[in-house]
Length: 87
Image (cartoon, rainbow, N blue to C red):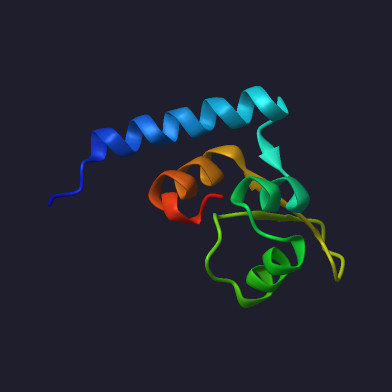
């Protein structure tokens, strides 16, 4: 079976529209992202520390614990490519 890019594009658009309508912003914080991925905040923090298994994100600030923002399009892409990871 071949990967169907058009189906993935539809899924990504669906998830992007869903997230934009629900949150009315272009980036989600750690708590919102964990809720959408169906994982606990502590598990999300563990994955952030390990640097694997998450959508791309931006660190904002130069402090020891910078604010982390996940762009909606990165979350939508992650959800479309990993449907089994969604609650």
